[in-house]
Image (cartoon, rainbow, N blue to C red; front, side, top):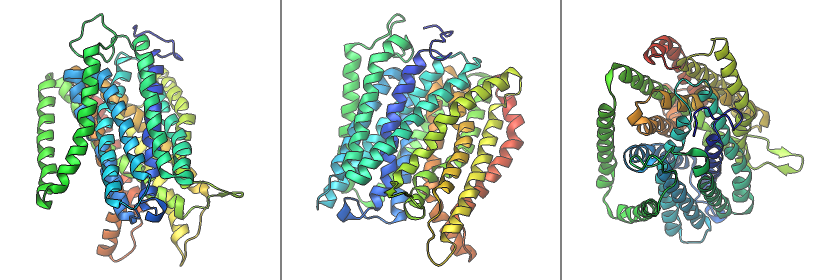
Length: 506
């Protein structure tokens, strides 16, 4: 495969394969995510679990956080043992099984304990499946281009369109099926979508990706997986699924003190291994400087996603409880608002892709740290707009249903911020990471999403704690706006230094 391939709208044809595969994987993930908090807070008699907001947000935060922790495992295994292609098959098949387990748990019935077991087991299977899939497909996008190819940021932006095309369709399909028909059909559709993505990747990868993503020690001329490698894929899927089920059964038998110790031990071991891997895989001052940039921007990325991921928690329930969702005689499902961000991504991603190329032509393309700063500033503005809407809705003695245009405007501002950070961040990691550590550093990058997602789930709880301490109301959205505003200022200050540390990579 030639690096000069321009068969897909000026980009390598392999991008079309990865675009569609990621689209279906995101269809699966965002369909499930759109339902998660609504399902957890729905009454037990209506098929849900009847949890309060705080408990549902915590489960959401732990799940969406761990979804971005396990990519470190998938990244390390891809770099050292499996290659990206095998890990994508393992992750995709595992996630499909996890969605089907959620569907089984959502069927209903009076046996709450059994339903909860299969629900949490399904979440666990999804977490590990995502860990194998997510970092490696992004790494393969980067492998389609040379590091200083001006198309690279644009390629990741197009790839990001695939992510959000899936994220747009899934709430409309899975959300409607879950809310309006039955919860299990929403999760079932998410599982089917994941299988479609795996099948597409199988049909297209050999023709369009060449050697990209093959196992590290495979022959230079080989472009397809052999029977032994497919056996390993099946074995890994079985180990992940049955391992989670076995862990769930064993976990219940442990004491609370042991349950609290195990995550800490795993965290220390995993963190230690990651540090050793980075030290061994990084050579020379230039590589260390670039790794430092990845780590600093990963830290700021946490604050962006603390604000942005209010979409799945506070925004989701704001749509259900505080927004006028009537369109004539039709009531818009609350989960459909999760598709607004994706609509704007699909509409605006080509604009931003062209914008970066045009600015580059005139030597005005902002360095990556400054793109991050602009994205953070837009998030702070969007959170402030949301705070105003929340004040209008909850400012009186009773709730006032506000126009859906408020949420639409906030999602528009957030989307513009996202396009300055998320696809640029993926591109940045593939450019700056040492060659031996690309998937591993992509896993580190995903860990910043994990911290941001969990932090997002705790923001409402934290704002209430501050309210008690300060003796006056603390609006969660003003709180988010203030935090991201400070992060914006720091990024603009650090921007010149970080740009210098990138050592000539733009």
